[in-house]
Image (cartoon, rainbow, N blue to C red; front, side, top):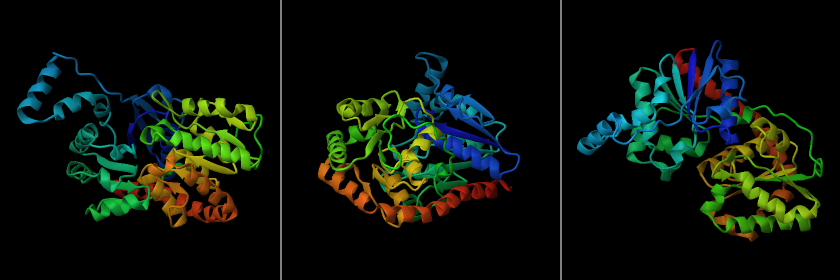
Length: 387
């Protein structure tokens, strides 16, 4: 069976890399004879994922002004308000790869959280027009993200796999009958343990991840995070490991974490992890931390899956839903508006520290169950293709 992964932005986002790596592994381990192919906006960044059977350029194609394609697109839209021809040309590299595939997985789990997605709607229509099975893999979608047009697109899918229960409940409440509850595949991803850097305290290092995405949504959050770092330095003997997880132009954790490092390196208790590690290597470091504080969802999944008590700088339904499914409540998840409140951040950190043993015990019970839910996604996939 040939499986086609698309809607992947590229591996500078280590969370996207983690999804591709873990998805490919669990499919190949559980569906005999399957081959997995990836379409990527940045295929050169994905070459390190060595269990794929092919990586294709899925970047957008330009419609040149005054070209034949531009004229047809303009006329079609002006007369009929129809952008399908233009979108088909923009995404022609992806659409070309549909042929010869048995099932197409839209793996951009976050894509539907960011407004209308007409390009993906068009690709999805082309998948169905070619008679292929269509799956939305490991998605998170909030109530505020849904529109009439998006719901119509969601009805096209043969299978929607929601990676947490909040999304599952929202979609089923909207009348969608093609939805199943699973867990993010990255809970199952392997780790690689590199040598520990100078200054790392084994059993007493706390990871901190912060992102430009959070900062842009709450301009006061950076100052509040610095207050939390200072609190940790003054009131504990822990080392702080600043941990990037997205290293993408215009959205680079390393840049903002470098500024933190420069502010506190003189304490000799702050480490900045490098920006060239892959997802399994970051997971190897996160797994050996005592605590983790993170804004990037897949950095927090790396921590959770290794039973590291985690405080989430949440900004979407996925952060809340994942925590709720692990603990039965949205434990230690702060919403975007709370992230400029240094008092709230410090209180939540102290709550995590005081509950350390309890949280570890809860995760030790929850993670095996959660990994089984990750593998359940492959069972549902096999069902729709008759394997």
